[in-house]
Length: 81
Image (cartoon, rainbow, N blue to C red; front, top):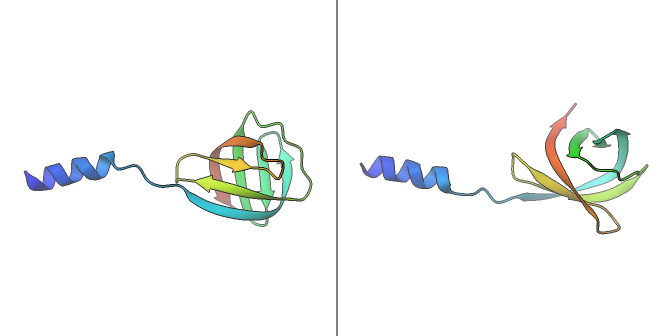
């Protein structure tokens, strides 16, 4: 019974978002951006950039990107190619 309670507690624990700095981000396509070998997919983000440093907050499932002008966009996926 104690193990079950521990598993339930672990399932309810919210994972803290990690913060990353991504340098020289470029817009690849609609809602797709690249900085080095890191790509991130956004939802309804209309930010146009050719070389901008950004802050990416990612918890493994969702997150946000903070642009140099302090605007944000929702991030739905992060991957490397």
